[in-house]
Image 1: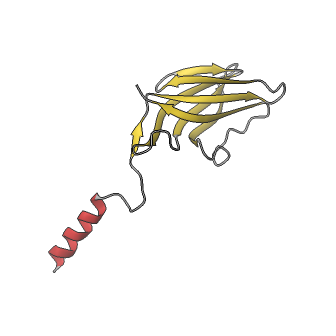
Image 2: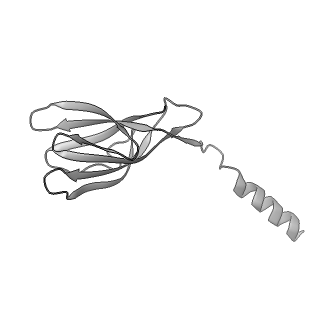
Image 3: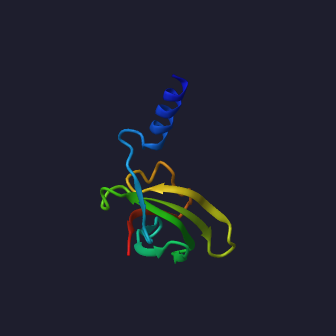
Length: 120
């Protein structure tokens, strides 16, 4: 009986939870930056493992993931945002395309958020 319970528990742990989607890794993240002072915005496609300067910020993308079953679905990326001038980290963590305010950059002038992941 204990073996059956252990086997059942192992089988359940090996299968993703009901409703949980499998994530695929993208090769780049499409990001949007906003200069809140003058209202200018810019988009950039930043390859995973690289950085791009967006206004006065250096944005690095460590990872970008999206639902494997729905490539146009909700993307989430691990970003590090630094000031270009002094290198001070302004944000480090996961950002979610559908909920940018959930884990947002807290900067007085600039805003950065994830639009989607790109795959090669």
